[in-house]
Image (cartoon, rainbow, N blue to C red; front, side, top):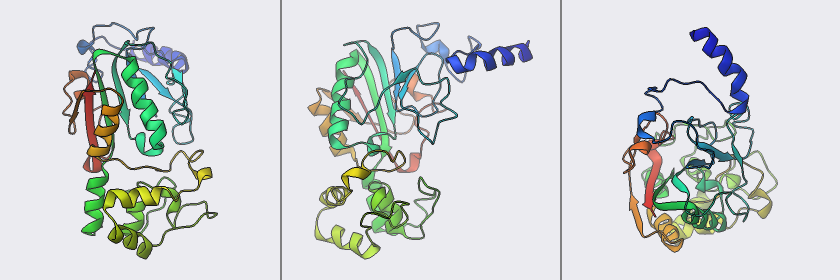
Length: 278
């Protein structure tokens, strides 16, 4: 029976269909009133990458990082780097989740995304965001914490420089290790000078503004923006959300989103967790 199930799932996989046990603990299906993926999206992962849950819809565009794993898992193709409306009806989503996506978008695109999520959420619906917390990262940079950044950049390079690792997390195109050598790179001394001359939020804005316009799109792995709680909360409030609060790893007020085998798993030591309700 188990082998038959594997064969059937292999055939149905490209269509986003999978045979599962109704009591599968990994997916925690007992938390959902539905018994299958709703035809009209109710649970949506924004910029989903290789995420999969049998009741959720994934919204993303194919990219080189997840191309193989995304096969059969992208129910909604949508480019978040445009001003196109999200393909959801007003007041229909129960939960929207967005993990490590905002840092790849401009402020204008993020504001548009937040407004669209607010429009699409049903009253009482949850929107949960996780992304690099640049207050945490700036503090690590100041104390020269060489163990804080323990992974290579999106192109497989691990810089020996703390300043370059920090820079990669909000303005990757300006790092000395970025493969595109056509634009000006910031050296460690320049980074230090900028942060000494102004408050760290203004410094990050100053640096982000130096990213060439042609580098803002088409480089899926690059971080082109920064966020902390204050900036995120302000943008969410502008979009209409009145209940916005700082959360933590696995600490969602929604039982569905407390499943850390599916949510909040990307770099929790450097991540910001923000949640809001409509």
